[in-house]
Image (cartoon, rainbow, N blue to C red; front, side):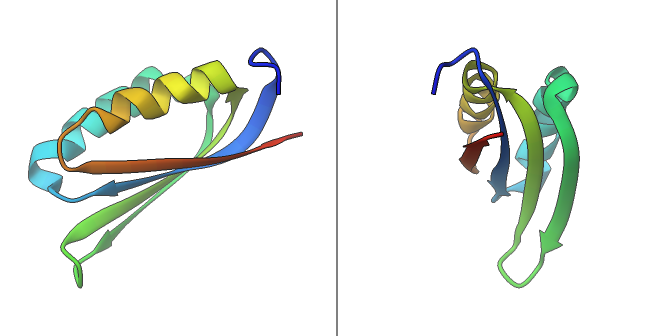
Amino acid sequence: MNTSEKAIGTITVLVKDRSESASKVNEIVSQFSSIIIGRLGLPYSGRDLSIITLIVDASTDEIGALTGKIGQIAGISVKSSLIRA
């Protein structure tokens, strides 16, 4: 896939320490709000974590920049799944 082509995808973010990480994640998500077309956040008290799913429409470079920034935060796991549309 050419990195300038747009892709539709999902980004799943697992937040292990909400009190430490949530504000940082929200700040980065706000910076990339122009490529995010949907967001779902769920607390999962059974495992003491939160799950955030982002639906994005962007180039692979933009998606990589978003996941890269989020992935640098301590206590965060992030994965993306993309499809050319």
